[in-house]
Image 1 (cartoon, one colour):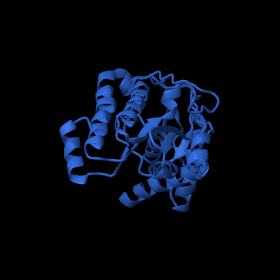
Image 2 (cartoon, rainbow, N blue to C red):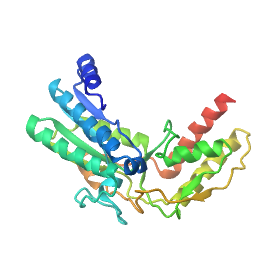
Image 3 (tube, rainbow, N blue to C red):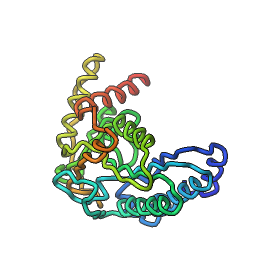
Length: 271
């Protein structure tokens, strides 16, 4: 993505009619440590893809933005009109990306949408690095290692299941507006890290019990807070419901159960 020549080669080969741009540097804390790296990947990389989209005649561009980092700390579900208040370079890059989408929509007639995701989770999520707490906790529990909860655990997030997010992207691709749109993609329901860890523990114990495996799981430990982490992030998805007919269909309990089942199945296959 940050390699403009490589992006051009991909577009030359595929000539996509529509583009869904999900690639990014995804670690908030790394963006704090290395803001220039974050900007090269998340701002210049986005520009490379936008420019190629125009050059090769793509009609639509869907961008994976972030409701959490864009709005800053919010304790009630924030709508798209909520003032942007990013506190990390990652959030600044996402906001910058949305401004570039607005420019390309005005200048070149590219139909653009920024989907401002909540905390996306689900099967196949990468358990390595700093993003994806659900995958990280499950990987550690299945390895017999204690999950590490950062800070005081009172970090509230809006968790949205990956299939619901994929459906939001498909609906955005089918939209018929011109110009730029921004849509929140979340549930409006807050879950703190302790609640999440308990839900994962219950879901995983159920799966392991059904497989006839040991359901004793190590207790969580606590570590220092991570730089750049918000205290609370909640999204109001009323606009995408009204305009595109999207609403979350998978509850957190069901989504955690599906995710735990998938991760446990991977471990079982390796035994």
